[in-house]
Image (cartoon, rainbow, N blue to C red):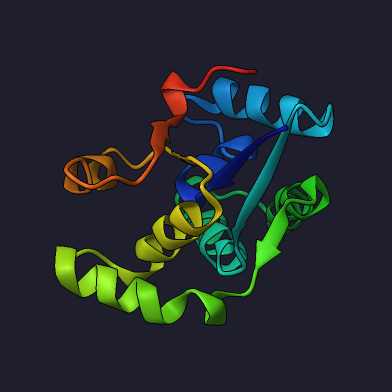
Length: 144
């Protein structure tokens, strides 16, 4: 089974209608069918909740709908990895590349698990292009 790390920029597209949301729906379908395995640092939930909060403020989405969207993300049931196991390496990586620690957590997990990172964050892909981190932009993801 193909294993992937997923970040918040991709995952939140499952419940927030944006460019490439259709691709994220395909990722979720493949996961539910057990064609792929998804994992992420546990802080992804905080990042997604924050995106939902910003989205609700911008679009006047009712709190009940935001809670429902968050429950959809929780029910997906991806494997959450404790961030404490990733932080030391993530801080080092962030310092080396002048890139945020919360993004570095995904990269450290991806590297440690030898699982490509699915992301919608083109800036991160560009910053880390010279590194050996396996990454795939969400829009380029193909089902197995």
